[in-house]
Image (tube, rainbow, N blue to C red; front, side, top):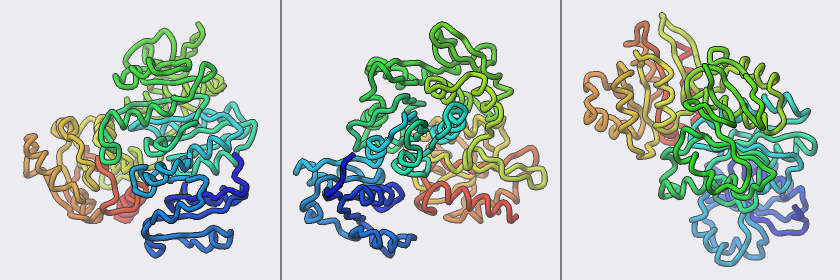
Length: 453
């Protein structure tokens, strides 16, 4: 990408926006970084960016920002529907995401994973699998490190594992991974996208530019993802936990198996797999197949599947107190993810749930709560709706406890009532923004409090 002497406007001063601004400046562009928030609202020192010659603009974003702009790079948190970007589109100013910038900069193939749930576990595992086949591997995107930085760091001769969100795909046009994977599509981010159809369309953009030389990995057990094969122009392979496939990754007699071009490879049994739970079998199948298509060898894949123990904030064991185990599942920011956590345990769960309400339907979640949860401790802005829906779903009122906006109080209540063989599980089924900056901060706070008990 040639940005020399171009006027670049970066919208959004979060991690990906900061990375895009630095990179554009280093590539010779004149850069303005704008955010609708005031500088004092950030826990970040912007003086380093000023020293690079980046023009920082905070507060109300007026249309004058667009004067002379050749290119806009937008952070994923900023919707294309904001007035400034609508005005830019009307003026035919090109708008790209930081992920698109990363693709333009990348000199190594990208393996990109999206889906409603399971992305972080799958991409973390995928990065380890790719390390068995490539000397240089980068992991980034929605997983924390801006993908553009990863692309530059890896350079040539390596491979990139990318976690991609629907937000990141909104402003992409040319993004083309060599291998893409879509794990599942269930209701999420409907406030942003407006409907399930639009949300799914954002997910499908991940393979829209792929051709016959590329691969798409899809979940055969998910009706929405299975149907995507009809819209793909690349080679499609499925993974399945429930069906034996002629080709792809699947379970056969409890063995994680890959079949490709007429050859079958046994990887490991479910019992040998380092990450537990049915959802993690799916994640492992997806990661293994993606890595295999990228060039990883089956015996190397097998060893990593057995040793990988999972990621922080996803059904993460914290400690045991008086015979009761505490688990941090702060990454469960929607009901489908929380359901997978509840399914991991046989029952006797003290569940801490609630937070920034996404207003998704709670029926399936609460049906499982009725079966497996002994006590429901509610926190945050969603508490009232969760309580009302739980009562309508016949969950006993005496088993619902409220902790307001205090994680300390929620854990204090849990410790007072929990007895073996019960477990205490933080699996909020909500975003975190009513109490924390992100789900990571929520999970760290949970662990801090539990470890201080």
